[in-house]
Structures are given as structure tokens and as C-alpha cells.
Image (cartoon, rainbow, N blue to C red):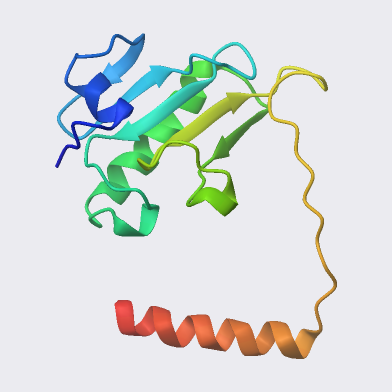
Amino acid sequence: MMDENCIFCRIATGEIPAHFVYQDDDLMVIMDINPLAPGHCLLIPNYHTKYLHELPLNYGEKIGKFLILITKALDTENYNVLQNNGKLAHQDIPHVHFHIIPKPGKDEGLGLRMPGKQASSESLGELANEIKEKLNTLL
């Protein structure tokens, strides 16, 4: 499934040039044109959908495999794998994709601040049970 207005779909079809690390019928890995650090890659399924949860399940194994292989090929111990879904979650391009970002030093790579909030054991348990019930209906 492709979208002629999507930059990633246009890259996949060769309409827009990119520096490919890998490409097949299911996915491509390209160099990010605005890298946070040398080696910053994007893993992009060729199936056009905005959200990760909209991908067909059969993509999961291949995506996981290539995330592992690319991190090994980058030959770095420190890296981030980032995937955003929706504008509020900082997704700029509405086509599911994964950033693989080396972290070679304190001032290079992904800068991140994750302001966690205190949660009670009771509220965590309740939420875990809700998610578990929904997951069981999906399995």
C-alpha cells in the first residue's frame, strides 16, 4: 500500500533520492537527512500507514530483526531506537518509521527528558489488569 503524497512512499518508489542502507519489498533503511549523530538511520516499512498499531502483524518480526541488525552494523554500545505515533507524540511524517540514533557522546545523538510521575501500586495494578484484558482479546 503506497500513498503518492507521502515522502517516504515516494522515496520507496525512487521518485525522491535517498541514501539507502537496505531495501526490499517490505521495508527500507535510509540515512536521515537531518541526523542527530553520524549513522542516524530510518527504518521505514513500505506499507503506508500513519501508526505502528495499524501495521499488519506480519511486519513485526522483520522490523525487529532489522532494528537489531542495524544497531549491530552501527557498531556502537550507546544508541536510541525511537518511534513516534501522532502529532502530540512528535511524529512529523505521517508514515510509521523508526529512528536508529547512535549516541557517541553526551552532546551528540538524542537529547531526552522524560518527566515521570509518581504512581501508586494500586493504580499501576489496575492499569496492568486493564491492559492485560485488552491484550488477551487481541491474542
